[in-house]
Image (tube, rainbow, N blue to C red; front, side, top):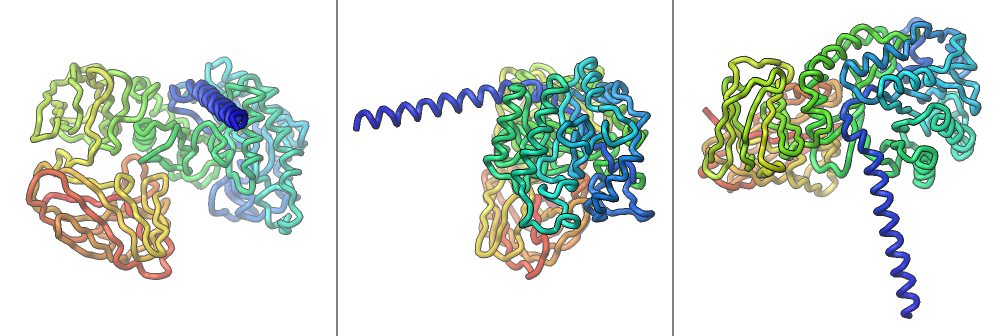
Amino acid sequence: MKKLFATILLFSTSATIATAADEAARAKRLEWWRDARFGMFIHWGLYAVPEGQWKGQPIAGLGEWIMNRAKIPVAEYELLTKKFNPVKFDADEIVRIAKDAGMKYITITAKHHDGFAMFKSAASKYNIVDATPFRRDVLKELAVACQKGGLKLCFYYSQTQDWYEPDADGNSWDFPDESKKDFGKYLDAKVIPQVRELLTNYGPIGMIWFDTPRRITAEQSERLAALVHELQPQCLVNGRVGHDAGDYDSVGDNQISVGKIKREWETPVTMNDTWGFKRDDNHWKSPAVLIRQLAATSSRGGNYLLNIGPTALGEVPPPTVERLAEVGKWMRANEESIRGTSAGPFPYDQPWGVITQKPGKLYLHVFTWPGTELAFYGLKNKVSGARLLDGGALLKFTQTKRGEVDTLTITLPAAAPDDRNTVIALDIDGAANVDPGVTQQPDGVVRLFSYLGDVRAMGDSKLRLDTRGVTTGWTASGGSIDWTFRVTRPGAFDVEVITSEQKEGRGWDSGQRVSVTSGGQTVAGEITNGGREINPANPYWPYVVSPIGRLNIPKAGEHRLSLKALDIPTGQRFGLTVVSVRLVPVK
């Protein structure tokens, strides 16, 4: 029995050591990536040729998904190879654009879901060198340019979807019989050899960016991750390899995570509505939105991977170049507040913007200029200096107590020096020490975000939070969210429930009856469109304001509030998509 116990202890200790060693290796791989915070995504392939149209008709959806959306047979789609001749591709120019924007890495689609490789591959002749008149390996040229420019080169690779191959996922029009598909065969014949080529033929690679882990098993995901680390131990694997086998997490497209984030993360973001080039997609995000999204992502400890979609000739569209140039100007003045920073010390955004930090420093990213004074609560550190990061002008400030709340008040210019994002740098004594509790803000409003509450599903409700911190699956009556918060200025408050439309406003359900209870008082009302609001850092998901009623909070101090779903009409597709409950003081 003693011998058996000793053997169990030995295996247990070895496993612990191995886990610690794996985590140390992962942390080492992530060092450059944590510091970078900002990278360029490039979606480019055969799908740039049709420019979002097929046989004279515009095809809805993402440009790089045109083969899937139009159900184009392989025999027809592969004819695009004869037209793909990107003679204006200039790897050095793309690297220059990325560097000037303040980006530190480039991730390019080595193979997207259409199965076409943008590199010379012995595993498949369906590639840019063997199948097109261009006959050049763009990844090799980009590798040389990145080495010269000091940027990390990373490769996107679609490991499960490949609409060209009968054994892969995604093509139901050419290969409809799922029972005949042998995914393991496809993995061995194409994926593994091509990943090996990418990590063997192009020098040091920063990351392999896998995508859409559909039918892949945990063992297969782990096998891919292990292959990457075997061939290049310092190469990262993103979260979409599947089954938590990656080095960090990849959140949903165009989403910025909030709440209890378990580990490092990255968000991929489009500059307009699509990833691959579409001639009719002119819905460009403004430089202000891009700058704010970069700051918001950094403030939550994430990396911002901003996409460009070159044309079939290899040119970067002018609106893309113009916007990246504007982001670059802002970065040159404010880079200190992004590069090498960590998430802000508060678990919520401020009414005026977001915060990033470094040891001994806080950076206040002010999106909404509050006037001649900015006050915020909860910072316990002594502040020794405040300045505008762009230009270095010193700002006057005071630190006081408002009741039990530590308050910092900064005197500001009457107008914002940069109305997109003005950064104020604070010198603080030691590591940031804050009160993380939800507190009534200096503007008098109490903001109770869903991700800061206790979310409880009941009955048939499948209530949960998405990566944006918004409730999803709340399509049946029952369920609640409960919060604890502090009030410093009691009185009467109008209660508003803020819900989210779907991406780009594509759907929203109303008519749900909810109740809000606090301090023995209950108000009930219906979710209706009382006005729309746009999140300045993420306009893809418009918010809807629903007035519910009025509550009286008679005294300062700690309080509880509960939001409950009294009735949700049957058959709703989206249900109750709660962003927050807002208590607005009655004037």
